[in-house]
Image (tube, rainbow, N blue to C red; front, side):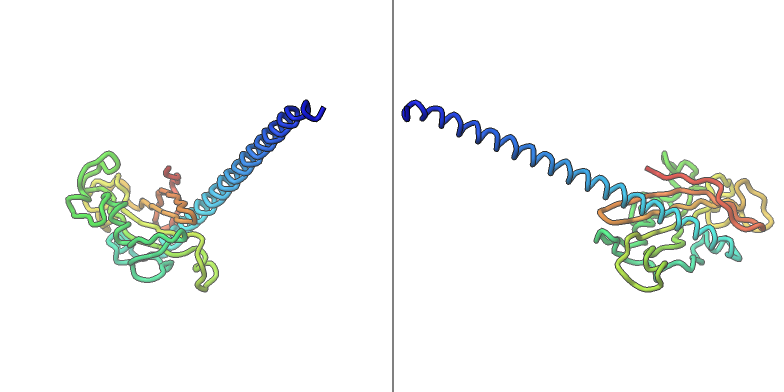
Length: 227
C-alpha cells in the first residue's frame, strides 16, 4: 500500500504547486492593477490641480490688465504683472526639471530658444499672420503656493503667462494695440493670453485665452485648453 501511495503523493504535490503558482499570479496581477489605478488617479488629480491653477493664473492676469495705464507697455515688454517671482531666468519646476523662462518664451514664440525678427514674422501653420504674428511677452510667472501663502515652500504648480497683440489686427505692429492711440484697427483692445502650468510628475496644462481691454476694464472673450 505504501508503494501505491507514492505516485498519488507526487500528483498531490504537483497540484499544490500549481495552485500556489496560480494564486501567486493572481496576486501579482491584482497588485499591478491596483498600482496602475493609483498612478492613473494620481495623474488625473495632478492634471486637474495644474489646470485649475493655470486657469487661476489667467484670471489674475485679466485683473492685472485692467489696472494697466498703457497696454502698449505690456505688448512691448516694458511692463509686467506684479505676480512675478523675480527677473526672468532659470526656474525649477515641481517635477525637478529646470528651464530658462527666456528660452521658454522663445519656444512658444517661434519654436526655438532664441528668435530673430525673421523667425517671428515667418508664416507657418500655427502663425499665418506674418508681421502680425503674436510676439509673446512674459507677463506673470511664479509658484502658486508661494503666491497664495506669502512664504516660500515647495510648490505644487508653477505658472507662466504671456501676453501678445491680437493677430487679427492688420497694422503690422505687434508691439502696439491697434496701431496706437487715435488709430482705428480691427482687433483694437483685444489681447491674446497664453498660460502654461507645470506640476508634479511632469504634468503640464496649456490654456489660450482672448481678453478685451477698454474703458470698462478687462473681460474674458474666449478660453480653451490646448491639448
